[in-house]
Amino acid sequence: MKAAVLHGPRDLRVETAPAPEPAAGEVAVRVGMAGLCGTDYRIWTGDRPVHYPLVLGHEFVGTVTSVGDGVSRVRVGDRVAVEPNYSCGACPLCREGNRNLCLSRIAVGIDVDGCFAEVVRVPQRCCWPAPAGVADEELMVTEPLAVVVRAVARSAVAHDESAAVVGGGTLGLLALQVLRGRGARVLVVSRSSRRFALARELGAEATQAVDDGPLEATARAFSGREGVDVVVETAGTAEAVAHALALVRPGGRVVLTGLPHEPTPVAFFSVVRREVTIAGSMIYQDEFPEAMRLVAAGTVRTGPLITHRFALDAIGEAFAAHRAPESIKVALVPR
Ligand SMILES: [Zn+2]
Ligand SMILES: [Zn+2]
Image (cartoon, rainbow, N blue to C red):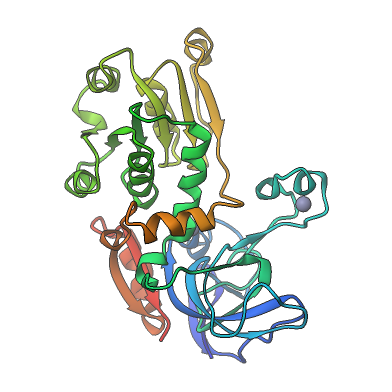
């Protein structure tokens, strides 16, 4: 099979390798379509260190081609979305139901070989059966969608509440739709207005670029009160955290799902005085079925987010396209 192997920063080579053989409890999945994200980009540039050689990629949908001993969850021929993180299952965090927080968690495409290949090997418990009649293209973003399904659940948003999404990338445009699906009215706030037409098409009631005026005033006008009830932050920058806190009303909730890599100053005076609840939301653990259900039901439209498609051989172009201003989600189609 072909695989894109990273040998060092920016040293990515498409090579022929033996197809991975599933061990006991594992399955081999032929990749139908894979998505590229900011994490892949940071690994590719060397910003995020990994052990080389490594096959990157963790967002994908595919078909089971072989199964190891003891596999009962899926069968050969099943189409699956793959949850690309698995925990130890034995530590106190795992046992109490916090698998996503397990300190021994293994990430496919980061700690072990991932999906920028024709075939990838994963534990059977990572596989979630895909609904029939929903195209690979629509299910490819199940992984980032599961991230925001969890974040929105943690916001405990109620019908008719006002919500703001900070960030207009893949996660932001998905969060917007999940919030809409829960009956919230949604304001999208982003550094650039480039995605605002699409955001409105996907259900945003209002949009604002951060430089277009004070966010507090926009949040008050949009909510008809002291600020929005709920903010879901998806941009993962210190600036975005500040924006989230500017938008939320006293007594409101902020859920952070982006990972700010730099130190993030927070005015805790205003957090305490306004009794704002700030919650982190880390990936997912049981959200894949719900994410696929939302796509199958048409509550979340994923097709408009896929702006580029490349064959595996053109993976270098895919990484370049990821950085292009007009790109949202770049897809790889291994064959
Ligand atoms: Zn990702
Ligand atoms: Zn664990």
